[in-house]
Every structure is written in C-alpha cells, then in structure tokens.
Length: 102
Image (tube, rainbow, N blue to C red; front, top):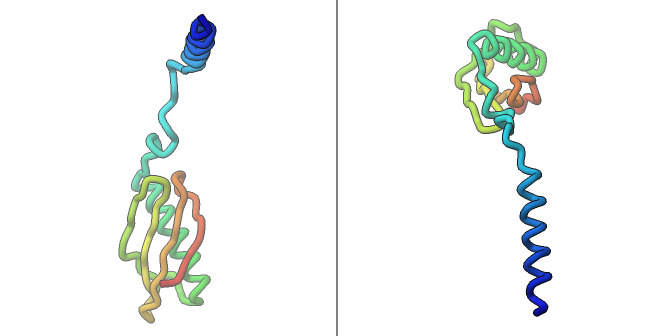
C-alpha cells in the first residue's frame, strides 16, 4: 500500500511540530504593559513639550483633552490656547512616536 508511507510522514511531522511548542510561553508584550499614573504623567509632559515647540507657545497654553489606549499604542489629544488641535502618539512602552496636527 502506498498510503502507509504518507501517513508515517504526516505522523512524524505532527510529532516534530508538537515538540516545538513551548509550554512556558510568555504573554505578549502589549498584554503585560500597564501604564501607571506616573508613566501617563510623563507621557503628558512629553506631549505638552512637543506641542509647545511645534506651535511656538508656552507650556501653560497647551491643554490635554483626551487620552486613548489602543491594543498597540496610546494617543493624547489636545489643543493650544488658539484652538489648534493636535494628537500625540506613543508606543506600547509609552515612548513618544510623533505629533500630528488635526
């Protein structure tokens, strides 16, 4: 019978692949990162500094209006005293990525 060698190859492949599975898999990075109040305050300060520089206004004229957490990033929305809107983007570790105008 010619189907027996095929079944043996398939069985061998399954056994080899099963041996590759790691019993102690670590949770994904995005699942274990939690933003603390101190961390979110640092993110807010960095957002304010970048917006202040971009719009050429004093830090006290920058207000943060919203904070959103996504699966792989964070965003802060804000505006200047002249009602110029912006969004600051951060990665999962809270590192600043970019500032965009709205």
